[in-house]
Image 1 (tube, helix red, strand yellow):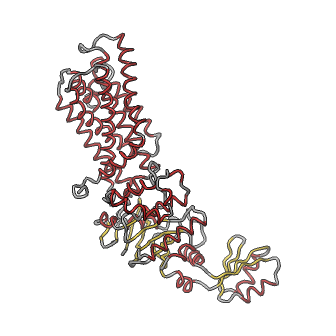
Image 2 (cartoon, chains in turn green, purple):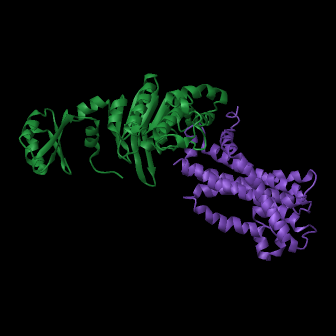
Image 3 (spheres, helix red, strand yellow):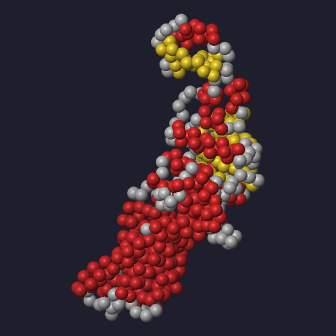
Length: 301
Length: 255
């Protein structure tokens, strides 16, 4: 459904993409993860033909991009990171007017609007003004709008950023129903739990290139020890330097917390049980641990 | 059909039309009230102290120029403030580009839309002129295509400004340094011959001056010195302007 090969792109001498390769099969949900500035949004723009790469090739929905970008976009849906719904229109007008850009007649759109509103859980908001909608409702409407052309593949750029937990769960539920219906999804996100929950496969980007790619489960298994014990409290620095490495395969000290990665946490937890000044949180390793290991703990701005 | 004929810009026009229809009443009242206020205020008020110009009462002379001024203003406001809001604030254009539309479709759509809106303002002005008995008969209607052309010229120039603008503040420069002086040197309020010769020479390169000559000729029956040149200058501003606007906005949106 999407093939990206050797994608390169520079902005005024700075290379933001340096050889990006990945493939997304039909029906797959693929997550593109990476810190700010890793090149996720630029990759999406290239895929949609909204900016021309300096090198590399892209095939989207059977069309070469950017040459066949219009034809490819006619078969694609986009749920952008920033809300660009039309504040001058009601909920259903937003869908009808957007459908027009795909050459869909009012008649066709009137048949589709009901289904789209139902999908977004906005059936009773059809004639509501946009400023009466909550953030979650707007995001659901944006998602429904991305489906006006019944696309084979949908791009979602940080679909749940800024939403409260209830609204996020509702979006996840809608996205799962899309994959269940056989649509291909490509999403970027900062939330590793979101990627772990939704994506069949994830690619982790950093500094303009893909540095790891697999199913979330296999990435966790391959990249990291199965358990993480987070230790904090008085004397944690000394503990992390001197004692922890005896029980854990890897220890990372960040600020006031020691992250101890171990295949078996029992001996470490036993030791910690004798040290009342230290507190510990033991949990299974997750995608976020992989992400941090691969991309580092430094803040990217 | 629309797609096959490369008329996709019409989707952008119809989007803007749908928004306008929601505020149509206020817009029409404003469109008609504004020229009436100017014509009555300046035409009768100032006109009482003015000798006839080219054998016409000042009100009539002023009305012939005001029809261009109102077309220029209306196209400029739409192509600057409204278009910039759709570009930057509401991100409407970004959304449209996610559909199978191109940046050229968007810019051409906005260009035509702002010109249509300015034609509406010009039409309102013409209605006011009929109501005040400044014009009679059917011949003055021939000014409307010229008003559309003035609209296309100023909408193109406005979109060029929008393409390079970082914020709304930028447009104050455009109005203060270009539009307002153009209004005074192009013979909207008084004949250009009242101005120093050097200023008259400059005015000959400005679209509004050519629009004013054409509009006065067509509405008031004044002799037109070079109507084809006037049309050509307006068309040149319109076409060169929109070509530049397309290039600049493509560069801004598709980077």
